[in-house]
Length: 243
Length: 159
Image 1 (cartoon, each protein chain N blue to C red):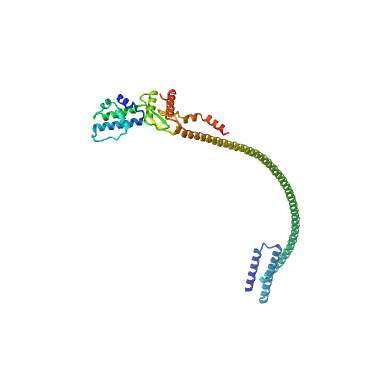
Image 2: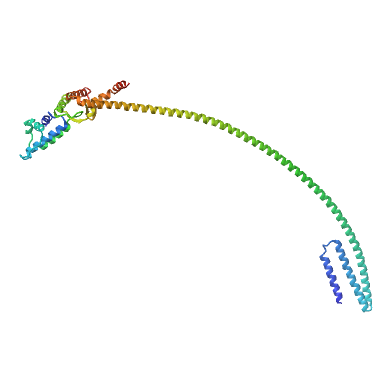
């Protein structure tokens, strides 16, 4: 009895496992189903023999054994058809898989080919673009060099022009400055000369006056002095200096 | 008052001499009116002669009461007189000064007073100042006038 219960539990667990693992591949499921049914059949046979050995067969038992026998037959038939079905399914699966693989392979090859073509195209475009870029860069460099060259030439021309102007201006300024300096120096010499001559003239007069003063102080008589004073007073009257 | 001033000015032609003579006259009169008999004035012969030369009528105009007033009036009148400043090259004595003064009064104005100043740089002759204006009539001025000609002569000599 205990053993019977144990086998029932085992069967239940086994079926549960099958239900849980329904996502497993078809072939494996079929194997499991087959093993499950085989174990159920084994258990039934074991119980039948055990009961047959211990007790003589009754009518009911006979019926039940028949039923079981039929069930086993049916189960074997089911198993057979299931096995066939499983083989068929496995074959179909294998065929479909192969077909799918082939399709996948061809698709992949196509995709790879397209990708390769696109990559090649992109590479060509990139190379073309780079060549264009290089050409443009060369053009730009050439134009830049030309512009720099032109600019330098222009600068040199302007510098030359300015230098010429500056030199002419400096020469003119120097000449005029020298002329002015010369003029100023000549003027200074003339001024100095005239001042010196004036000084000499004044000195001559001063010497003469001093000499006259010394001489006349001794030689001029009082009468002569008075005559000169009278003369001066008369002259002042004539000039109407004293009114 | 004019008679008194004219008498004093008669032989007094310069301002310095006029002030000096007024001072000695005043001193003499004050001594006469207010001084002691024993007090003597220390005057030079020329001053004494001048005091003696003054007429008696002049002295008779003064008395104790009016002496100060008359001198005060005289100073006021003198301040109104015309003064001719005359620069001389020598220091004249009183006689020479009198001669010059007499000539100037004869030439210009009988009441003219001379302010005598000394300037030997004039060499000879005189320079005058009338109403603040200076005019040089000396030999120095004549030399200045003839300066170019004189220098020309000298330059010829130097060559």
